[in-house]
Image (cartoon, rainbow, N blue to C red; front, side):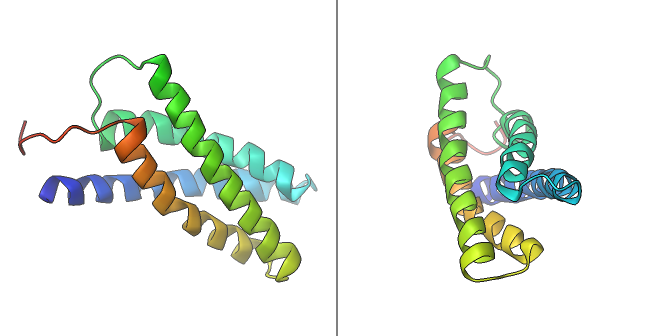
Length: 133
């Protein structure tokens, strides 16, 4: 139980870093009048690279060499989360007329649960181990 809680906390810390990277890139691009859905694709990709590196090595402590299948699973889960967050960003901003920053933050928060569950159970396939090992 403690190991799962520790992973969730680490995932949250990495998620904060990813979100900061994502938001900084997003708002820089939109400040320069890049269309917000294009900015979303670029900023999400930047956060995704950080996510893979930190979650693999620190959160889930995967020691084996990265496999092609693992990378594909990571891309698939992130494409799904990207789709969810982009759709929500569009709905919140265009349909519900939320300010762009609020829409972006709401969409980002909504994608976190799917990303954690998919990363833990499918991408990095964390094996149940005794604590301390």
